[in-house]
Image (cartoon, rainbow, N blue to C red; front, side):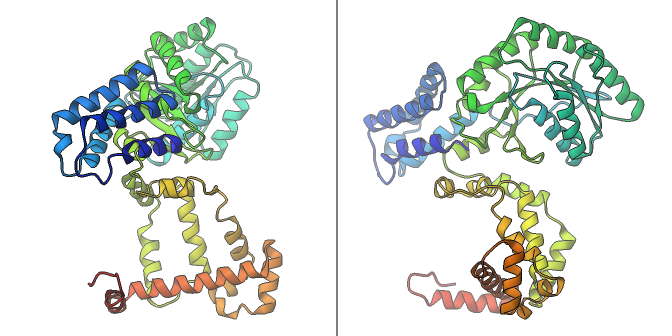
Length: 448
């Protein structure tokens, strides 16, 4: 996410790092590189210029030129200004009304239908709501079928009528259906177009007037950069929407839309889409996004994702098994599933401070654990329970069953045994103290 922009920011600040004192000339040189990085990210020139001017003014106002670590202070000021530019603080979605009605808008191909499903899934599983999806895209071929597929995938009902070609009629009937059947949220998926046109604007404006939604969201493809911001402005002038959704932030995103859309339309970014899976969406926090853009990671979001997938009873049971050295391949497989629920592995690693640059060029996809899972699933229940019975012939059978080589099976078993030893050692406080003491005796290691 924003890898190129992060790299360019890092390069811009390198001139200041490690220097006890800098000059106003160096500050100007650094901010020139920052402005260039923003322009390369497809941020509007005026916004980029005003942004760097604000940083310079505040930097000089804080005596950055004589600060002990002026480079760090300038990065901090940049982070504060970047946060403010993207909205300052997170704003929640408005769910007032019974049912609450959410109107989705955007161009064709922005990911609007997919995000409607993601939002329904989020409201159902994270907010305890009972959402209803309404298929009001009466133009795009198979749009209604697509929404039904999404609804089946997440277990949410979809209201549709292929014989009715009037989005106003479908949306009002969907709300009535929700009232009669106990749904407390209705998400209206409307038609998109290949470009902003008068017919589309009139139609969605008519839908909004008819249903009076509690929330109108504009969905935009973050990969389109400044074009996304211009489209948002056109939609906002007609719809006066409440918030923006940035999709496809897992792709080759330059970052211009995320940085400048709030400044142009004065509406907050509320959600971001980070992948194809229904769970691949996040609430938008300007401060956390600023940290990620500047290569500082996003530990808070990482911890939140871990907590969402944390099962206290399972954790206690696992802790007891580790202490008794009974951790087996079934437990290992379960831990892999927990990690996968948290999201894309590369995205998770990018949330760790300093790891963004390290994983930038690594090819880590959603199938990163596929080979390991195949090997474990090719084992018998007895082999998963007690890996020590896996002899040579069994390893050959497991390799054949998983489509891998015997060396891959050997490597996994060896890594598993080493993992067990470390986990068992860490579960014992006395062993841990002994380990720390040994580390203290090593050259270059701190004493504990």
